[in-house]
Each structure stands twice: as C-alpha cells, then as structure tokens.
Length: 126
Image: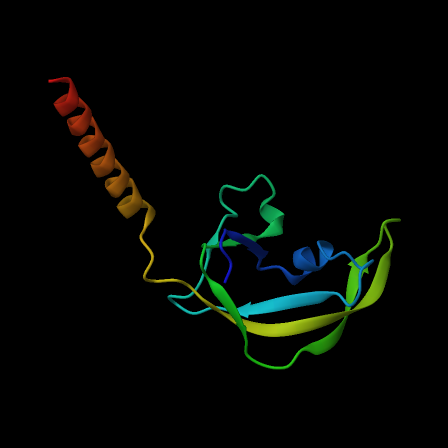
C-alpha cells in the first residue's frame, strides 16, 4: 500500500529514463488499469507534458499479475548516446481505495470541526 501520491508515466520511454542502472537489476512496473482503478493524467497542467505523468491516489496498492519478464530496452546514457539495457518488467494491477473519503468530504468535515471549535470558544467566553 502506497501512503502518498504515486507518480507514474504512461510512456515506457519516460519511465525508463528515471531508472538508476547503477544499483542491481532495474525494475519497471507495467500497470494495468480499469475504469475504476486508475489514476489521473496530469499532462494538461504539467510543465513537462512529454512525461505523460499519471498520478495515482494515496492508499492504492499494486499487485503482481504475472511473472517478471526481462526486456532489452533502449536507454539514453549520460553521454547522449543510446544503449540497450536489460530491465525486469513486472505486470501489475492497481487497486484504488474506494472507501476513503474524497477531498470534498475531508473539507466538509474540517469545516464542521472548525465551526464546533468556534462555538465552544464562544461558549467559554460568554
């Protein structure tokens, strides 16, 4: 379970660009999404729209749906050239927490708590 927002990309090329190949076997998660279990595209507000960022909500989980496959992927190296690197690619599915409160529900609850706190403070003064 991821407790914060999870930034992903719908572009495999962009995602591979963030892999640090200096530490062990690089891993990439290919996330299958459905109509309900999915994130939201930030491309329309992104300063870097080519990254095709998709934001997943807090409290979502990723579950492996199969065995990892090794893929040879083309990766830009530090010198500007292209190298073929081996990457372990995991097929996973996302499960979004549908029981959590929405932002509007949290805002309404906070507003109610502030109103109660103000009433209590006024009651103490009177």
